[in-house]
Length: 128
Image (cartoon, rainbow, N blue to C red; front, top):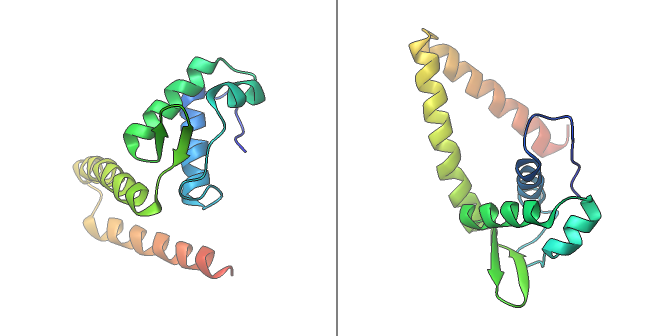
């Protein structure tokens, strides 16, 4: 399900969030699917339950999951997830592009890079 790298500088809860996001976006986890309980996942990954709780809480704030008291944590509908993540990523994109422009990277180079990435995505989508 989720692979943790204990040598990574990224905190464990961030690795869990990244793993869960990937599972949701790749449809490995589907809308309304119940996630493992905090205790179950903590036992599986051999980490503190508070770490899982923090990751789940952050994922809920980001719109990836929702919690029903007494029932558990579930995967949110894709449209809501995509909308929330798109807003977040566009903010990061704006910051990065602004810095690249400040560093005198030409807008044409940025457009070319986006086109290259779009081509790479097309290859992944078609399975070539």
